[in-house]
Length: 120
Image (cartoon, rainbow, N blue to C red; front, top):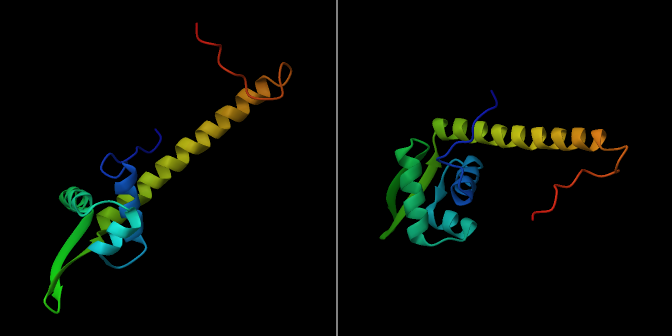
């Protein structure tokens, strides 16, 4: 059975946040917001969902008198990301192999992949 996609991190913004956090020990809330190009409310909502899944740790503190929030990927989050990326890779490889096989079967008829019949 092929690896399964993780429904918690499957959404593109959740995947981007998880992958960003995998590249660092800890990231400030604003850095994630800027990287993902989403609102504060979106980052907050996604971070909470990832924290509830056990994939992200949220730490609150202050720099001077200004409140700050930092996020880090947990070991469970790193494992989930690794498995999700492996599942995506398996899907892509299977599709490419199927396309190549279909193309090989159709070489006598057409040098390119067969097209589906037109819709009526």
